[in-house]
Length: 200
Image 1: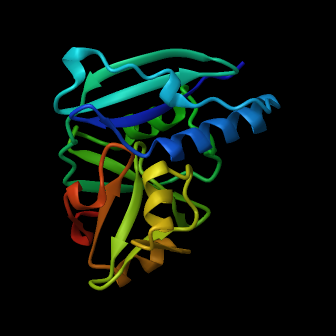
Image 2: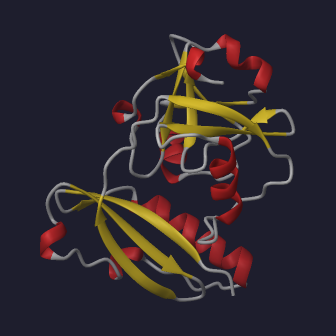
């Protein structure tokens, strides 16, 4: 049975976006395992005293049951350039624990820890190996309607009207000024700007 995971942000003891993590987890359990019972992650996350201050990553590993809950300090990666990589057969529509294909793509296409890959599938922008992508035209924020994985932060920002879905092909990148990388741990206002000149 496949293992999946959720990465949940905790800051100074407060848990963020839990309803979106619950929704995605229970949706994956229903689709992949045919399970109708739903879990509420708040019943499983007990924050140890030493992790009640600062930015903490909570990693919940699950399949048909909750298998483990882990805590660790988190630091936002300093990414200063992206390399466009095309991969038309990549599928990562659930948050599987096995990320070997993603990690291999990054390993063979990047030269340093400060570089990340921007994955293009069938001509359209998707994600990086660890985040969704949002792009600014100077006025509004847009996110590709073709992500590999619909992230919880991405979904919450769409629901709030902060970012807007749009089909974005590789040729459309020139319409934007810069982009940011977001995930459960990195909000839009926390993510460094990456200008299009740094997309290789």
